[in-house]
Image (cartoon, rainbow, N blue to C red; front, side, top):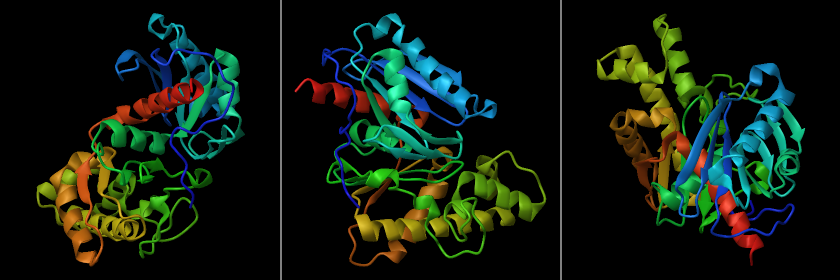
Length: 321
């Protein structure tokens, strides 16, 4: 596993003012979240658009390029030095390509060049979870820590790894914590069996509760409410998810020794119902290891966009040296 600075990007070089704004876009499966961000991190303008993935991968590319072009036309974007773009899936950061994204159905898309050609600006490309982890580390719950694991738990589970203040990329494949085998027998959408994501993601918790109770559910938040109300089926499903997360987190601590584990995503809204037993599970599995702080993310669904802005800001800073 190799470490690369979070700020390393390549692409066309433009003369720009280091103290000017940057344009940032976080590409989600449902929504594109964009902002024009000042040098001090203030969002000067914020916009959102539908991703339109149901219309196919080419339309998503058009939506992304169009959204960034709209942001660049905002009055607040005058003098923007760069674009930061955070996307899901496997991302080739040095090559500027979206290698693979199941959600967007992208395969080997040269997205950095496409956006740069549309805007005339240099583009800093990053992975959405790693961008969120960068934002949480610099300006959120991980501030002040050099070794951080950021784990958003939502429809799926992934992780951003910051080691010695460097964001780990590993060719775009680092951080697939959701596909660690934690020892159960359920199949995963990836084709494997036993994956953490198949038992402990918010989507898996909701699905497993609905299957066992024969009652439809609107999501993991409803299962959490059922746990608090004493529902025995919900309690078993929840405990199995927490046990699996404890198993995975202990493996991550053994390999990476983070000072802080930041839990984000929709499941983090459960607060102590999740973190208290998860901390106990983790403690029971550790011996000589450095004990990480287990904390909740503070930037919410803004983390990816803020991280994209940080990538753009770093690109501007690098090109001015």
